Amino acid sequence: MNITFKKAEILKEHPEDSTLGFGTIFTDYMFNMDYSPETGWHKARIEPYGPIAMDPATMVLHYGQAIFEGLKAYRTDSGDVQLFRPKDNLKRLNKSGHMLCMPELDEAFLLKALKELIKVEKSWVPAATGTSLYIRPTIIATDPYIGLRSSNTYRLFIILSPVGAYYPEGFNPVKIWVTTEYVRAVRGGVGEAKTAGNYAASLYATELAHKDGYTQVMWLDGVELKYVEEVGSMNIFFVIGDELITPALNRSILAGVTRDSVIKLAGSWGLKVVERKISIDEIYAAHATGELKEVFGSGTAAVISPVGNIKYNGKEIIINNGQVGQLAAKLFHHLMDIQYGRANDEFNWIEPLQ
Ligand SMILES: *Cc1c(COP(=O)(O)O)cnc(C)c1O
Image 1 (tube, rainbow, N blue to C red):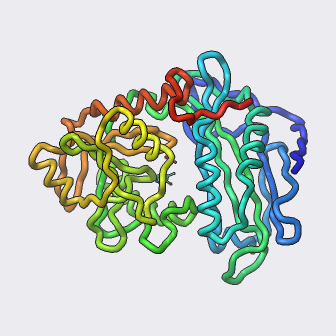
Image 2 (spheres, rainbow, N blue to C red; image 1 turned 90 degrees about the vertical axis):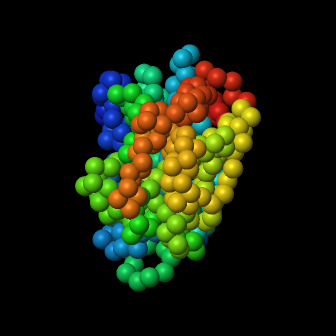
Image 3 (tube, protein in one colour; image 1 turned 135 degrees about the horizontal axis):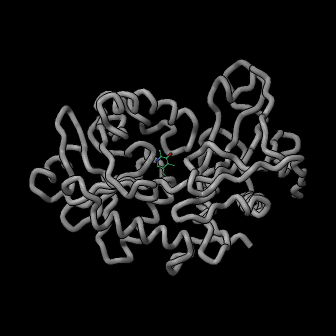
């Protein structure tokens, strides 16, 4: 399929790298493509960034049939632009689409389209330490219809946003709050899909955490409210004794690309990495015996997010004296070094733009 290009009349001014936050500034162009049962995916185009006019009956607005991805492009010291594991994100987009009854995408074509869009917008990839170009591919159901079924037509779009360093004030631990009342996802539901409703469902408990002075929610499993699943919209890791433990994928946990990178990297350093069920009680017991050394989250936005405090059933524990753990810091720096082209890409995770 051909990708057409429509030039923007006016180009936006680029922000200073030092003023960048997260998710508020978008580039000049976007990629769009439509789906209908008769023509399949068609009309692949790069065109000026702008609003999408929609009939108020458009299905995505009512029934939430929407999926997305989040990945980043990085500028290396030599000025080149590169992507981190984009094929894994596109594969996951198809997996989410499958769960949401959406038509399959040609991942090789979409990677080509993504690269083409970023080539057009290369000047928008910031260069300052820790900054990057955040990439948000999204698919929405577009039939104008009020009635519950899966849509026949879809729009895929990719938008780009230059983002600042996640830790402008330094790499510091966050405080997390374990909810014993609300769940993010449940086995048999759509927790392992990156679909809009999962995030809407997480807002209420997150507000309760904020009211109590905590940054993020730790989610327990939706069946027994006993086993740890994720923290905020990140995967979670625990260092207990000399093992690195993360909850095993159980169909309600989102299979993070960063999670997989942490498992492979830590394994290559000779660490014992274990994927298994781990209960919140076990974590508190390991803290009581002094065996719980580190807790950290993993995700594209923050890469690694160390956890300093956990509150569960009114009882707070402090991890590693509220300091960033050694392993969290090592993983954070090494992953960033790979992403910015400063470390050897031994796992073939880097996708050059060319
Ligand atoms: C996106 C996401 C993650 C992290 O995935 P990455 O591929 O590492 O960015 C973890 N949990 C949830 C719920 C997510 O939406």
